[in-house]
Image 1 (cartoon, rainbow, N blue to C red):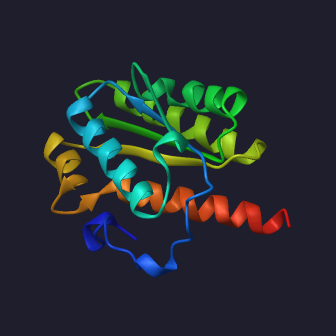
Image 2: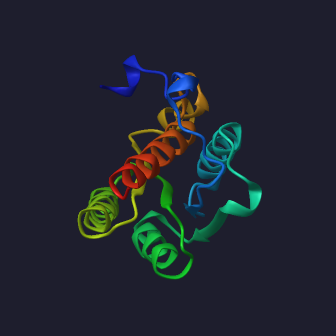
Length: 164
């Protein structure tokens, strides 16, 4: 469903499992940090709202969105997390750079999900304008970070349910 028809921060609180025993890695792009910082804040607040403990929320930064795949892979490889949330923001400019960065990050995250055992949550905002990014980082369309946190909790619960 298009974000224009759905507030990213609205969900049924009771449909979300308890995150008390879950461990999260969050890799966040420094590029457009005025946006990614708000997404990070939303994700952390939502994880805590569902019981995640401070010591189980690990945050690392990477320079840009293209590096999210490497950052997520390093979390999986070295930190024993149950899920990784990859947060970035790419705003279309005058060159094809937007297309390459978005495609590379998207394919990289998809590859990690297709071949790995730890869910990597896609928190990359790709917009035409900064205003659209702001709308999705706590603005009129909610906060994509909230949505990513809920998705991470639900995907961990999904994976754990299959391991029983």
